[in-house]
Length: 303
Image (cartoon, rainbow, N blue to C red; front, side, top):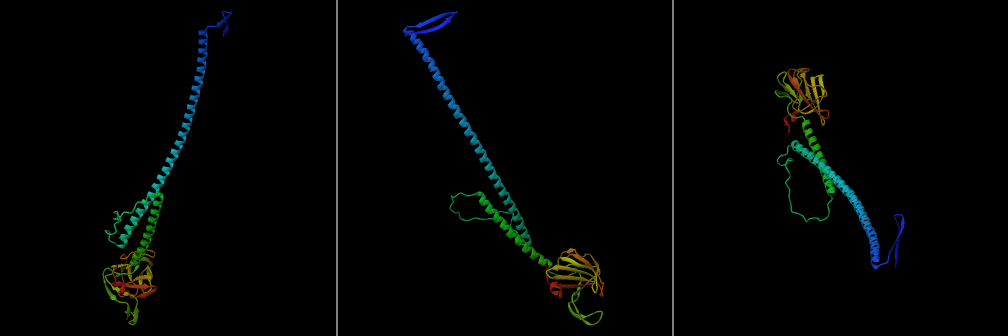
């Protein structure tokens, strides 16, 4: 087999003939080398392209995983925020319960050592078998918060009951309407000092030094402050629950209609105004608009 190469060298045709075996071998080797190089290049290119595609796919998967991790973190942060909100609400409820409980202890005059809301409660008991079922912490906290709210409502109602009871005690006439002096006339029929006739005396008279203190026997609201026929300068106080007290013949009045007064507050100065024979306070107790004997209120003591 002859292989002839045709070409030009310096403008002249050149012919090269391969005829010997070694020449054929060299030519074949060259052709095979070129083919091998082409095949190797193609294989390398295909392998490299495959790696690039795998790398791109891996990067896409990593991007997806990053998004999932970010969402998980966001959800976890939301759960933590919700948990913190639950705990904050529970702490606020516990604080209110402690304050309310301490106030009830004070109002009801309970033993502060027995009902100590500042210290942790003592508790205990046998252990129970562990429950392997999953527990929803939000549900547990929500239930506990509802229990705290329920206890707060119960304590608030108890406080209202105690306060009403306390107000009723404060509103009930108790004790004498003077700080110094003596009883000069009782409730009931007596000889009138002006007419000399037997008439009904619907109050008690407490005599003393002119200008001495006249005090409220219970808490209430002043409904009359000024002159009134027969009473001279009169103070009338409505205590609620049907109780009204009157303090007559005052020299000076220290309160006005609409004022709130408390038990033991000085409301006027003893005098002898109106239908009176000397310095004293005419004291009446009305229950449901009817005068009653004040003696049982005078003899009772404030609780």
